[in-house]
Length: 111
Length: 121
Image (tube, rainbow over all chains, first blue to last red; front, side, top):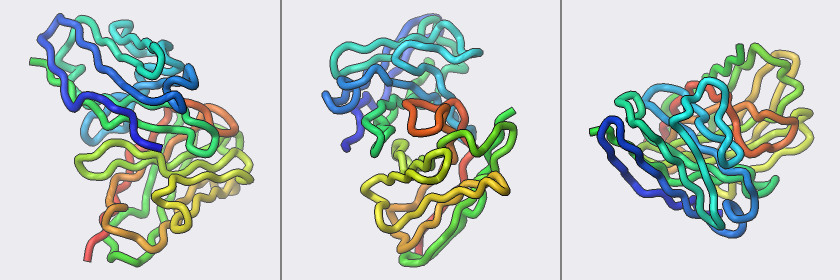
């Protein structure tokens, strides 16, 4: 199972919106509405930001939203804040024997 | 609250073995599937293994199949990862992750802080 494809980096200024793409195949992203997104800060446990394509866990800002079309998914962050600067990983369910396939990660820089 | 605390990481020579532990608390350990996920230096996340709530179903990434064994001990609420025949490419931070269900689900909101394994001579 190959990793999902994400851009290596994206950037934006405070207050702007950015979108991170995540491209998979018909065996993972395209097969299930089971895409999730994680935020990683150095030295901290990964944080779930979006699950089931567009659901937000309790406590996650509504500035974060997710979507999916075909074999691709996206994470949009609106009203960028300095604290959003982190690495973001998409993840798709790919079946019970290989449940989680991750993207390569995207480094978000808030200018 | 849910707590997952990994331990057992360190520096090990290629070909040797290491066992990671994950102490779980704040929830009924025997009711949930558990995963190991790793992140190599400057690389992305990689799912490693999953064990069902009852320990009867175990699955592994191709990269570790035949070398790593996931297990759980419900008497002391601990998840394990036995790593044998270690290679340089196994160098990574290893995260313990609680699934929201009894078997593999599609996401998880509960991750440990990770433990670093370095395979080097």
